[in-house]
Length: 401
Image 1 (cartoon, one colour):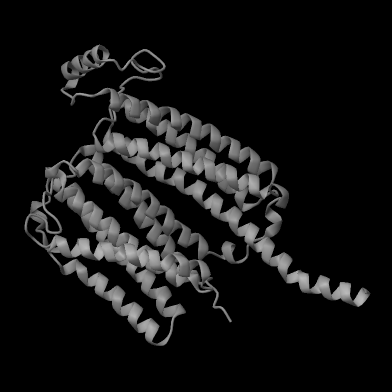
Image 2: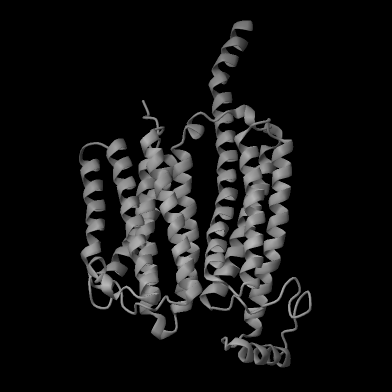
């Protein structure tokens, strides 16, 4: 008999992990918005001290933001490890259980290491672990334990990428690693929220009557396409933030007085002349302007797509269905996200507004992905229901013959 994944405390713990990860995304947004990612220039130490023993008296200005980000990331890592160990112990036995737990505890022991090279080696091993765990998560009836392994390996990789972003900054690779680190943070947030959904009562008791079977495929495609579009929009946003060019186009609703500003050399020089005279901002390039405009327009298109998804969901689900509620919440969060984006520009990227914009962007991405998973779950539950009736139908046909 397969043990149910419906454990109320496990679900609550997964929700706590998801919430902690959302806060971590927000802290990362603070660090990037303030441009203090290099306030602590060494890693995994903090000015030569072990991260956990860095004196509070030295937590000042940008050091406070960056060091707090690192400490909270460590907390998320420990929560991810606790979740992984929990489900592994619950769903494994014998030698497999002992080996798995020992490996994960050894991974936690890395927090005492001060050599960057060791972390890089372990991160490479974690890539292999994820590649090994994915097919087993697909085939194993107790797949949650393998999903726990994946989330623990992923949080280690994410932490190492954050550290490499610091170490490689002086070699000119800091920005690229920073963008990748930010995007992986969004994907990690999606993954831990998926665990919260999978461990919920709704997932176990999926009501196939919520969704019109004839249009389920179309709804899933619409949700997935819109979610991918939001991810692309987040990519443009991460590129702007990590190049500190969120105000490459400082006016709204037009851009330098046009729907799409000119990006020839003379125009860019003129923009920079006004920017440098106004507040001493860093010079921008045509690339920065184009990325900023793509971020704006994909945001508008994404909001329209979210609205379309909500209409489709409303027409093809029953009253009171969870999918309807999620789609309406998606529209509301999307509207808030666009409003925060506008306010961020009008306020000259005020830290609290920009951080909220980053966090709500993660929520917008999340709701689309959860909707995709929910449609997939309802479809799989319906197929399982149909298959359970097939022997009855077949026996009735034989008896009639």
